[in-house]
Image (cartoon, rainbow, N blue to C red; front, side, top):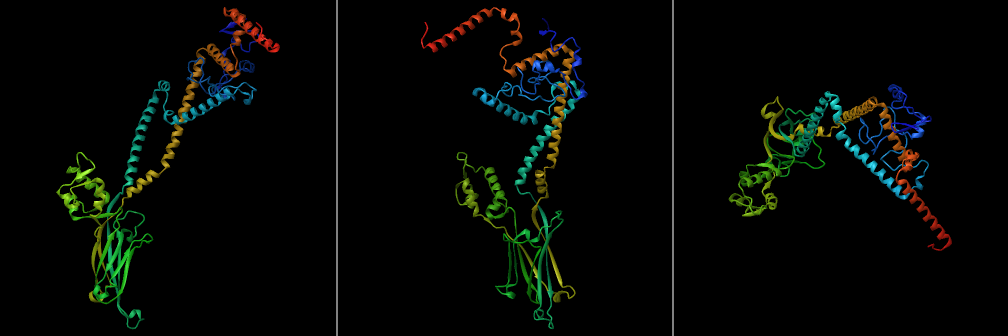
Length: 508
C-alpha cells in the first residue's frame, strides 16, 4: 500500500492525484461552479457542503473563520447544519433518541435561532462597513468609508433636530397679525305706501373683518378670533331690556364671517362694540401691583410663573437652607400679604391676582343717510387690532415629522447598500477560495478531504479513527497489550456475573 500526503492510494481509490487538479474545476459560466466531485467519492467520503456554523477543524488560508468549504455557484445541500444542532444517524427516528440528546438538540436549536435573530439586529450596524482586507485590495473604497462616516454624522444631526422640533411643537408657536374690523350700517327709510313692516324706518349694523396679507389657503372665519361679542346700544332709545346684543362662544357654535343687528329707528344711535379675544392658550391680566413688579400686564399662566420665578431668583428670595420656602421682600409682602411662603402655595395665591383680560372697546355712531348724505346709504369704519395666529412653520414642522416618503426611500437605499456589501464579501470569499487553490492545488484538495472526513465522522457518530484502525501498525503500539488484557478481564467479569445470576449463587 502506497500513500501520498498521508492518504492511502490503491487501484480501487476513487481519486487519482496524478491527474491535473485543474480538471476538477468546472467552468464558472456553466452554472455548476465549484469542485466537481465524482459520485463514488461523494458516496465513500460522505461529501457534504458546509452551509453554515462553526468548524473546530483546520482553517485554510483565504477562508473566513467559522465557515466550512465555500463552493461558489452551488447552493446548500439538504441535511443537518454543523454547529446548529446535534447530528442524527440516518434512518433514526427522533422518538427513539435518548431524552438527554433530544433535550440537548432542542437547546442547541433554540440557541441557533437566537443567534440568528441577534445577527439580524446587528446587520444594520456592521453590514455597511467594508472589511479591512477589501480596503487594502481596493484603495478607492476609502471614499465609500468617508461617505459612511459623513452619513453617520448627518444621521446624528437629523435625529437631534427632530428631537428639537418635537419639543418645539409641544409649545404654542404663534405670530402677531393685523385683523381689520369693518363696522358699517345701512339705513332703510319708511315707505308710507308699502306694507306694514315697510312703513317703519330701520337700520342695520354689520360687524365683519379679515386678516391682512393672509398667506393661508384656508381663510379663518371672523368669529373664530373672539370668545364673545357684545353690542351695547343707546339705553335711552331702546330701553334697559333691548339695548344689549350678546354673542358668546359655545362648544357647538358654528363660525361665521360677521355679525349683524337690525333695529327700527330714524335717528343717529351711539353704540359700543366690546370684543373679547379668544387667546389660545388662555391669557390673564395681572393685578396692577404684581404687573408693575414683574413688568408683565397680560400673559399666559406659564409665562407669568416664569416671570415670577425669575424675579425670585434675581432678588435671591429663595431660602438658602429650606429651598422650598420663599422669604418675601417688602414688595412681595404687599402683594401676597405674608412674610414667608412655600413654592407650592404660589399657584393658589396667584389665582386671586389673575383677572380676565380687558375687552377691545370700539365706539361707533350709527348715522342715517338723510342726516348726512342722501346719495350714500352705507357708512363704513375700519379698525385694526393685533391678534395671534398659528405660525405656518408649525404646520411645516408637523408635516416633516409625519412624512414617511423620504424614510421609505432611505430604507430602500439602505437595503441596496447591504446587498451590495454582501455581494462584495461573497466575491472576496470566492477570490480567496480560487487563490488558495491556485497556489497549491494538491495540498488544498488534501486539506479539503481531511475536513470532509471529519464531517463524515460527525454525521455518522463514528467513534475512533477507522482509517488508522484498519492498519496493522495501529495494533503494534505499546498500549495494545494492556488494552487487550483489560478487554479480556471485562469480558470475564461480565460472564461471571451472568453465571451468578443464573445459578443464584456467588462464586468465590
